[in-house]
Image (cartoon, rainbow, N blue to C red; front, top):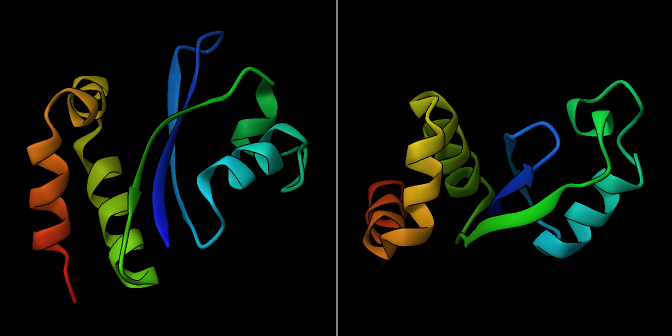
Length: 96
């Protein structure tokens, strides 16, 4: 399982989700509107995989996703890439 973050430069927005697919596969499904035209990610086709975290379980991936969303911060999301220790702490905090 993975927690993943997509980025759209057109919208200047991040999208955070969790999946058991490889993050690149999940990105492709979003771009191809596999999840429907009414979903947030169908607003544009320029989504790129910004970051992903490999998790040990579905629950861990969902908990990390929920935590990232609760931060409501582009800076926090960008810092995940800059400071790998944040990811390590998240994996430990939400380990099963």
